[in-house]
Amino acid sequence: MSLEIQDIDRIIEMAWEDRTTFEAIKYQFNISEQEVIKLMRKEMKPKSFKLWRKRVQGRQTKHEKLRVFEKGRFKCSRQKQISNNKISKR
Image 1 (cartoon, one colour):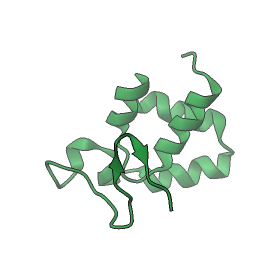
Image 2 (cartoon, one colour; image 1 turned 90 degrees about the vertical axis):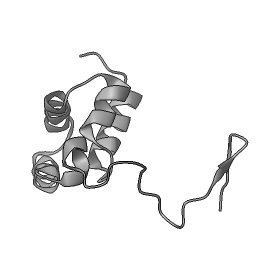
Image 3 (cartoon, one colour; image 1 turned 180 degrees about the horizontal axis):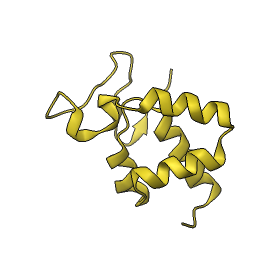
């Protein structure tokens, strides 16, 4: 697996996000859940990796098949709307 530093950083960020599924990471970067785990183990400090594994293990939001909602996605009420391809800023 040959990834650029920016890709590795983004994968780690996505893996830490509660609502980003492993399937979404696979779709975007074409790496499996097991490869994400290997990448996290390699790139993180041992304590951080253990905290992450404890956090995501069995978490419903990290696996599409375990999610309780079928359609749509969660959206925070504070999230700004995107209009005309320009992202609104605070």
